[in-house]
Length: 441
Image (cartoon, rainbow, N blue to C red):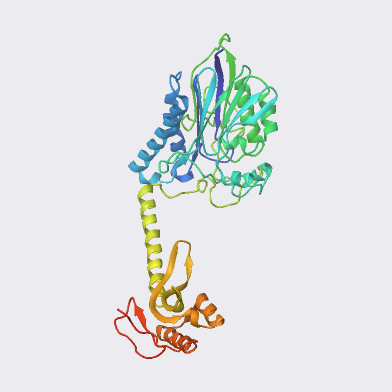
């Protein structure tokens, strides 16, 4: 069984901001909401540019839907990059993007940022998307609750956006539809002040037009300080007659002029044909009598909203160079350690004879840290048990001369007094005399 969408879209500048940086699009085959980020660097341009690319998908899909959605988001990202290249003053602008492509049976979603998508089925509402925000990471870690996130001082900080600089890291997923389902896509101007219960109450009533208007009205009454954009779509059978299937473009993307309403500055005049920002232009000075709280932070949250990340360019090259640098440090450290070890000596046993070793009196698995340096004719068999065990454990020496003196003491303690001769792997001179190591060819 295949379905159709009956939809409505509405966007309002809100009661605080002077510009609408939200953009929305609703058509027979696609829904999309973008919330511009950047304040002074034209978040409205970013959101409208993204919508301009995403709306090109509004046709019945004939291929892999996730590939199509991902491709549209990448094209939006590339287009924003081109705008910044042409006008560097736009550097820093970006937008969220939450979109859904419809094929008659299911919706395929693409999501970046903190705009949201919900599914209202029966009497229950379910949030389909997950916010890419700092406060969401705190919720995931159990450090704050969903309710506390609505008033957190960093609730505006998003971690992913379509910015023309970073690779798109979008969430892609499918939702199978049923007759009677109602889908909501909205900017955080609505989801930030209306909880799931309030959203469900509104979505349970009336037509998509009615629900969209009521969602915006409720958001304004709840004290949102942001722009508000809501798209509502009902899933209906093919036999249901749809009076109007005209695509709807709202918000910054619609670029509609706002009519001044001097006598009632907060009168809501939403209608189905476009942007609901038909309110009196917001004054620079905000009256103290407003019945809701306004952040006192002198920095516009929109300007500080997106957490900048360094461009992910030359990733492979940087990783290779980092690996080479690490290997270089390890090699230099190993060389220095080896050089130091070759200046250390101790007396030990080799083939039953007392031997001077060069290196450390220790071994690593599979690696020897020392080697015989001078072999003497002092046999362990002619030493006392104590001296023999000491030699087997290794007698540390502070220098080569100190090691030779230790050999002389052992030679003097032999049970049979004999001269001592040595063979050296590193020496060419020999030292004659009882107890002193000498070389043998």
